Length: 235
Length: 258
Image (cartoon, rainbow over all chains, first blue to last red; front, side, top):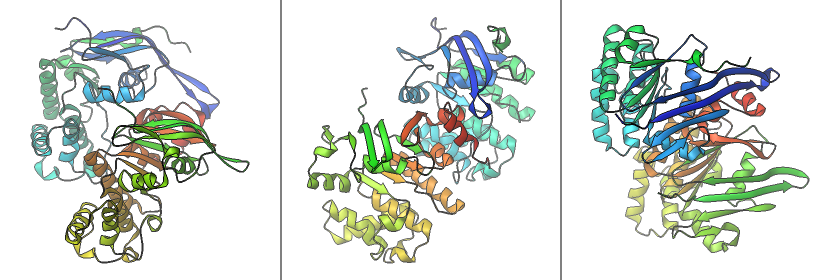
């Protein structure tokens, strides 16, 4: 195991300011700090509304950070997501960080297999090879082949989520962020996702995620970080 | 890997008499990146596009562009001939109203072929073949090559305008509300096409749109304009999911989720 963390969060704080509601302040996280190492899977724990999802989004650079640092190792460099210029952050996502959201954001007219293959093609894999690997992954996730060419807009929640997981896992990223990857899956497909996560870990990928399903969490997670244990939130 | 910007705008301002079109806008666009300029009507986004593409003359500030030989040129210093060449070879401009970007009385094939001739293509057969190939890429059947765009639907015209602009492999394309005024289903097809072609050709694009969904689908970064100024910038998903400025919060919260 590498001795330097791939992700190091320290003193992270975030408060939403809702200008449309007279500038109401909505604190989400305060004093968040932890390290994540290659090959381990760590769950963010705590009740609903404790800021787990927001923290995950801050690590990905989807939400802004008010205070503190989120340092991600990118080869020989360390990039602070909290302060990195937009183009550096985009490159960090290309090289290092993947994100599996809770819901698939459908792209009009693009078929499921192409949605999944896209990150690989973006990485420079030949379209034919990318499409082949996308098909293999969708097959493992039990998505019927007759659906592969169809845009996922009309798919069921579970089918969309499997497309989403495949899209999020197909390319290699040393740091994976997962927001409830198994929420609407049946037991058989949950087991496939557990296997896929195990394979990522063996490949040295560090995973930070939100896993509400206790069985999945126990199967894949090496430790749990309780987000309510961070510094007291200022009301 | 040191990346150099393709286009740099510094302190761009434009006044229309006492009215301000654009005030002190600075931005950079890099090769292969899509930058969305969003804001409501009257925010100055189309004025900005006009300034960046030098169709409008700035009251203050300057625009520099990296030529194919690597030289960074102040666009105001280029001669008329040099600028014309740049516009024909290196740039494209997709306008909201296809009639403004197409020659409506010239055949579809002629609209595409004209740009090729402008960059030195002479062989009729090759020009026609290339035109038909590009019509195919924008999903216009080869048997429509001799029809003129007046016989085309709005969506087809817009796809033809895209073919006309991309056939010469430009490095930078300006787009002004390219999906505005189209039916939603037609819009989706066009967006998907733009998305594919931009990725495939590695184009840099500056796209002006009031439609945040278009910005999310197509752009890597975005700038939000209000009253002629840039009030917020960042990675597209960050600006849309965690907008900081009151005006951006209003814009984002005003969109009906479908």
